[in-house]
Length: 149
Image (tube, rainbow, N blue to C red; front, top):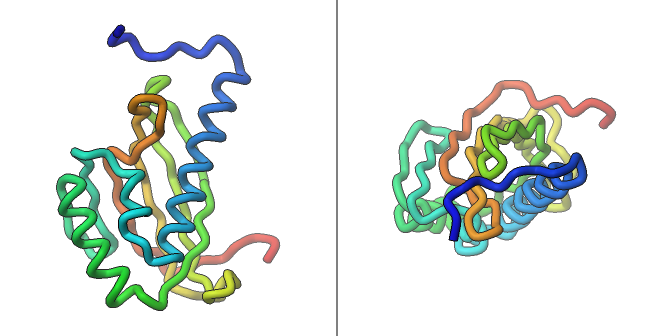
């Protein structure tokens, strides 16, 4: 098994990786909206580091998962969000930074105008063919306007 990172041979290869990352974000959003910590956290690497919106740093999958279970069943049990990908920048073929806007929604998925949204950055690494969150930070933003809505 080689330690060399994957090399893209074409624009189509890069697009496949972008699509795979976007699909991961869709799955993370769905798990958040179902308040399912285990499903959400299956997208985090075992040694992931996460800083949540209140500035608490969580280290390792177990701590991230335990915290997500508490907040998704407690203070966020009635919270829902829509995630939109602002950018995907490849640091290497197997590492990408992803900026994600999170807009608060009703349980039916309607964006709550002037709601408390956030902007997250995920550092994603491709492990055994799957894009995983290796590190991230979620930051509250004051205005959450979606163009065209």
